[in-house]
Length: 338
View 1 (cartoon, helix red, strand yellow):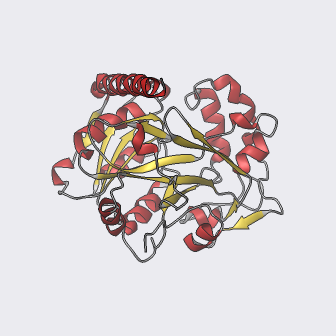
View 2 (cartoon, rainbow, N blue to C red):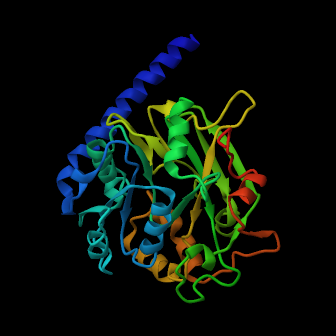
């Protein structure tokens, strides 16, 4: 009986994946190339993908950080930026960029657009799918390039790697301070504990919640707090599809970024730089646009709280000191990667 149930679940998920792919490909005409350099993508190149809107404050460092890791090419979808983002990206020799004026929410928060690009250009490549406010780090990233990590993942039979999205924040109220070249220098604090992790049986993915947003904005209803577990690094196949942002994908075996035998799997961390000083203006805009949550009315109070410039720092806050600190705190693991 259990075997029959598993077969039926696998069958339904296979059709769900096909529907997600069909939905995404139906939106391919929404993308207009502004600078298409994909013919320059070499075999074995590591690619990064992102949907962005008005991210000029973050993109120079975002590109610098991930270039230093070893990302070879970047593929962006610009969703109607009006701050020069698209033009800036088009000037970068290692960037391809497409533009679209269509609704972010209606595209599954940009995932439909990225699915088209991943299928066209990411097939067979290791692909890092990120938001502009995320900086990927992993064990030894300061001395070993991303290509060495992906080679090791290939040798050990892994097709994906998970990461915890770690909210970074300042010491004082949100919205204060001027621009910083390095966003982590502006947001050097994080929560080292108060995380809850569950394994979702249907997709076999991890569901992690907690951190400063859970304690500051969702204390009364913690299950509504943002999901912090992601699977950003995948050796892509055109048949794959993300289900919810990069929190989970299909086939579901790619979500097993953990070990069930008592050992540890390699994991990274996404340093989440959402709370830069422009967060107040962005929160006001997002509340009006209603494009960032499936049920935007439920999160009106969240945006109102952000616009009030709260202080997320507390006596239990921890100052960021690098990947070894994150490993020691149990927030990431090298999992045999040396």
